[in-house]
Image (cartoon, rainbow, N blue to C red; front, side, top):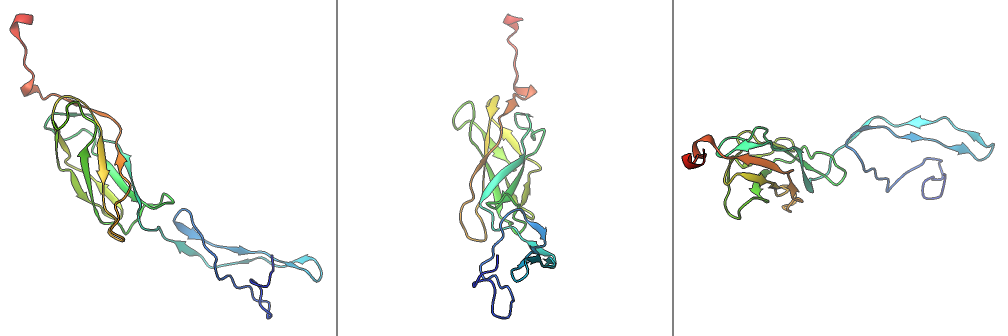
Length: 178
């Protein structure tokens, strides 16, 4: 709609507080108008393509869940964690360190992680050698990081439950029960 805050006396529309939020990517805008003098539609004008960039990351999302593992060995599937903004866009400028910690586990304080901190590249932290040592059972991990742009903690992400099996060396059989 034409209005005094959009249309100047020389019939140039100026938008001083136009904002666009959503998925990062390339966009164009179409401008439509109706000539009020003769009620005819005017020709639509399209802007040049512009890019909506992601905002600073506010949350972490586990995009590849850890797979089951054997005590003391690398997990079968290594987790991948993304740093995303409020619109769900990966913050490609995020290069902070993502750290995994044991959250849910069979016995409190009974598990340790190795390979648990990774620097994100373009907003993605890919773990390659995550190893869990502890009691056999079901576990979950928390992913934590700090946004390097504003030094605020990102919202923590928790993995799905996975199972840690005992290593073969520590499995003992009692011959009296065979």
